[in-house]
Length: 247
DNA sequence: AAACCATTCAACCGCCGAACG
DNA sequence: ACGTTCGGCGGTTGAATGGTT
Image 1 (cartoon, chains in turn blue, red, purple):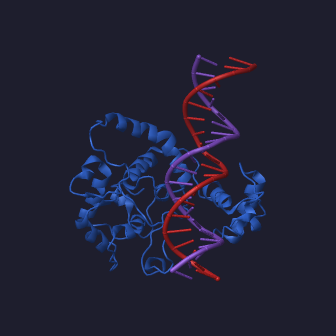
Image 2: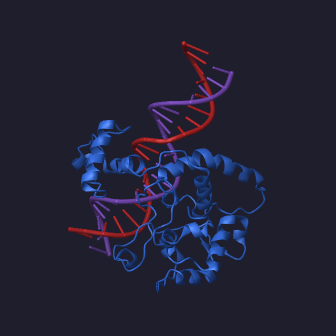
Image 3: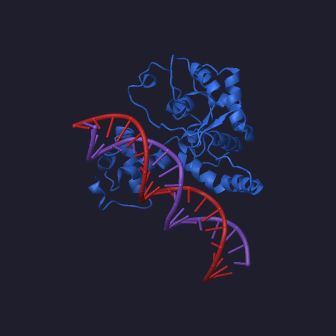
């Protein structure tokens, strides 16, 4: 119960609050958000502090305009991931999930969605706009890839500049057929052919499953794709999947 | 100059899953 | 096994700003 919420400040952050929060994070680091309001001396809830830091105060945030490349990548990723803003933002260095979400809602949704709606024959069976449902968002600290046994690619780490770049030690590239699969997932309507759409919108193709899992480099066996898909998406080299030059 | 409308985006809200006692 | 807490997410809201009449 967050009884301490009574009397908490809301609304826009002041410069003074920003300074206090920034100072606190620099001193104690990110995390332990429940302690941050007390440590920083701001009358805000933990969520508000976290959001302010992640969306505004973090030093690596790129607050400039979205470049054409970024927009292109965002569209591709959205086609692949759906409204998984945090995952999309993770592939756009310096961008926050809030930025991506806002940009999509204000700039791209109007451009992309309405025309699709208009083009859609009213009698035609429609495919839900969520290509993949990636269920798990967080993982146990005991999982192998969190204990140093498995390579983890983390593109969300701060970068020296604001340009997209591959990780320093990228994992082995996927096999050609794997790239083809993900390419296919990005190109649109043909996604329906030869693959499986489950009732709840999950996209699945069993033949490819084993191939992908094997391609992760570990003897990692998982029965249900929904159990590993987030990890997979996070850790695989999406730059290659998207067929983009690493810049 | 003022009123109105549209757009942008920071911030809040409610929910979920993991961790912990 | 269960309840609580915490971190994190996506959806939504509303104030601020810009543009138009």
